[in-house]
Image 1 (tube, rainbow, N blue to C red):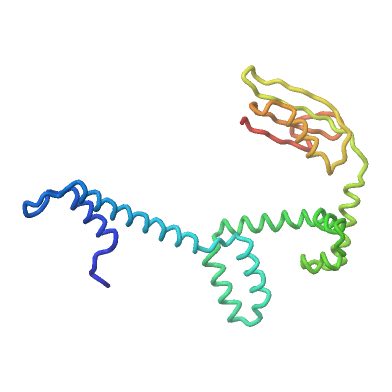
Image 2: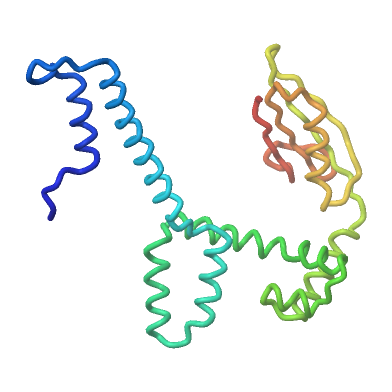
Length: 226
């Protein structure tokens, strides 16, 4: 281990030099102190730049590029030694909370696949092309597309809604009915909430058919006060 002073120790030495009395009866001018302060400032700038560079070099395990590399590497790691090395890197770079995030994202993507496959098909992609990009089979992609078509073609349903707005004067409620498809139910909620004052907290309940208990609502959303 080196006994040489570190850069931070040298910085502290310069600060101490500016604070202590001049040595040997030599008067230290304000210009000299300014020069010393300039050196201290340069050290601080250099340290900040190095810290920023070190931060930028850290791996973001949830970045698209790193996740893509992990997926390809895992797919190509045929022998047990390459796979073991990859798994060690994954274990070192991911936290347990990262696992929680990725599992939930994977579940959300699986639920969203019918929408994504249907949109891609409308944009001209074939089921085979969609299958190649997603890793699903072409027959599974075709099922996704049919599922989404049926979902969008569902007939409108009568829903009853209530919005409770919490303002300075207490709670006020507004009720109504609307005929929408289940796929557009959340859009109805967004439109109704947008019609209320954004300064107040608002909560919407939507029931299929007639209104009932709040716990029976098929859709609930709270918009916090802004």
